[in-house]
Length: 155
Length: 348
Image (tube, rainbow over all chains, first blue to last red; front, top):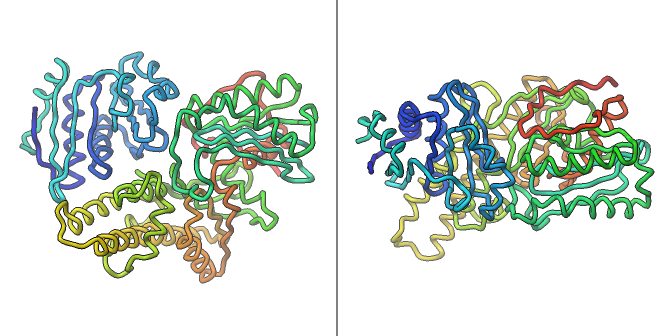
């Protein structure tokens, strides 16, 4: 488990980019934190680092935004508006996992039971205007990711 | 030509009948959301997205209301994107099959084209070209509309939609989600001078928006002014919340107004249509009206029922395409991602 201190939007994006650089094409990352914590900001850094040039919009309304990236397919999910985990069927969640892809999931609790288990859980808390970011690995893949990621800047 | 319109792109199920000479004959909507609190987003529930159960009864309802029989329908228009794929497929499957059974043409409609043409449903409608500001829980876009199918995206939100920022900030302030309208109500009690929030992306050229930072700014202000163990009494807490709401609303409204003014000046087009759920916001309406007046132009507002998702706009947009001879062969598809710029223009 890692505890990092992140100051500002750019640093949050850079953290996303650092995780992306170490991530395998197939992995599942949960993002936990209050509204305004910076979950989508971290995801923006992650997706831009993998070669996406355009905007990374909030998926709160659409629930899901797909990205075709040079080395993988990546899905950004925001389950905030989900009333029941079964609603994930409406999004075709099973199709998203075949073939393997990267899943970045905000508000994963609302999809409990229907979501694939995470390799990594990123939890963002408040510390004044800064953010405390806790990253926990939940699999061998997650361990490898954390070992390969260059996170020295935030330690 | 009598056209049936079906809208099922997201949470609402909308159905309408439009007739080329008589205009809109009937329209109806199924929504879980209180009609008075209908801007800035909706709370989706399994039931509200269950278009399968809603669409056919709604079609029966508009037919009865308009006093026409099913076999008098001459064309079917359904929303085929963008939106949630499961929701879109329901409307597409019902619309296409109904057209097949009745041996009439069917046409897929772009949801945003529906919104852009919705002002044409009103008696007092703008002439082409006009600028449209679409602001809702899902979209914030400035579009130049030169004719049916002739759209140019001038700018859009790079992160959160304006309505989404309203809803999320309302939630942070302890209001129920989605709380955009409530936030506006609380803001009316706020002191406009106490806090000043930034006007994102107004200090550089361009017509894009960004509202995500405002949400974070509101959160940081709240943490600073209302810490967990605060020494303020209840009245002071309420006032601080109202002041934050006011600063937030002012920032969003100003930002939208600044970009609209810029779009009007840059394009030279002095007609501006305000649509989408957030266009119900009183501050926004007033300031847009004043601004357009000062620019020597005019603002248009479709009635609230046509600002949010509805079947009438789909029936109308579909009619425009059907009368130009467009229709879909015996197949259908949903396009969850669909750029407005990919649409074909319709010759008048």
